[in-house]
Amino acid sequence: MVTLEEIAKRAKVSRSTVSRVINDDPKVSDETRQRVLNVVKRLNYHPNVAARSLAAGRTRIIGLVIPERVVGLFSDPYFPILIQGITSACNVHDHSVMLWLGEPDYERRMISQVLHNGLVDGVILASMLMDDSLMQSLIESALPFILVGRHPTDAKVSYVDVDNVASAKQLVTYLIESGYQRIATIAGPHNMIAGVDRLKGYELALSEHGIVADSNLICTGDFSENGGYVGMQSLIPSKPDAVFVASDTMAIGAMRAIREAGWRIPHDIALAGFDDMPFSERMDPPLTTVRQPIHQAGYKAAETLIELITDPLSRPRHIILPTEIMYRASTNSKT
Image (tube, rainbow, N blue to C red; front, side, top):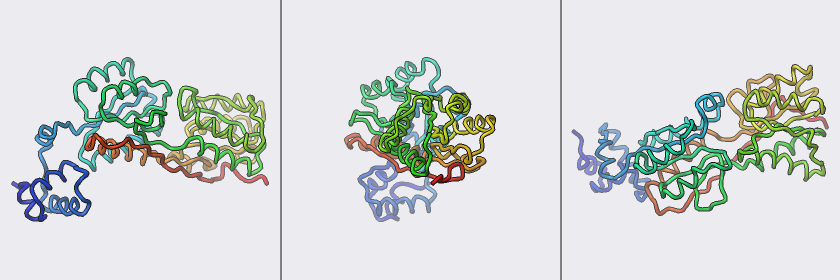
């Protein structure tokens, strides 16, 4: 049986250093950490997780809270991709994930069963809801947590997000500068920060180019395919020549409504989305969209939360990840 003493001897470090490496202590240098991990791998050493958790007073379990019902969770590719990123980081750092979905009464159960009973070391709250009261409960609990998909005004709260306003503004600016004049939008829900911010970006782009926003060219969807379909049907009578849809999933529905109206993309109307989902490049025509790094956001959120758990005195982390416009055949230049 491989012991910590044997690993320490071969790595030329102390036993306590080996212990710190195995327990993800951030104070160990990268060079020393890698040397110890190389020996651990070579000797095929597997630490006793239960013993480590007991000794450290930690469960090595991360709580992932998603205020979505099961149906909504798996009908939108966003959450599965996000979860993949989170679990990837947890696997690398030898943590497990406990998933809590937004079924009825989830918040009360989350507070009573998790926050007050020490079932998890920290929480990732993947909520875009503007009035999610669970965030305040997490602040009051003093349990390490991080938001993904929104950034609040409270500077004490850690988060990982993208700049939805700037990204939407950049895409709509591209449409304006490509010669489109009647640019419509299917916005996201008004109770979700991503929906509000992407609409704000659309309006800013119009305003900065001296274009007055036309209420007949603005409608609201729910980030679902059907929401995009219904939204596009309501816009068609106003004859837009381009439409910015606040999610690629809604863009699928919008494309179907456009085709049913007998319009061609991009000849009669340009179509642009937001997210760059795996299916977006395979749409016909391929969808111009904003690529946001969903997998990276999940990975970074989990990795950062583990750092906050390991070092409770560290400062809150405010991480904005870059986006990129993917220019494809659903739009073209009219100039």
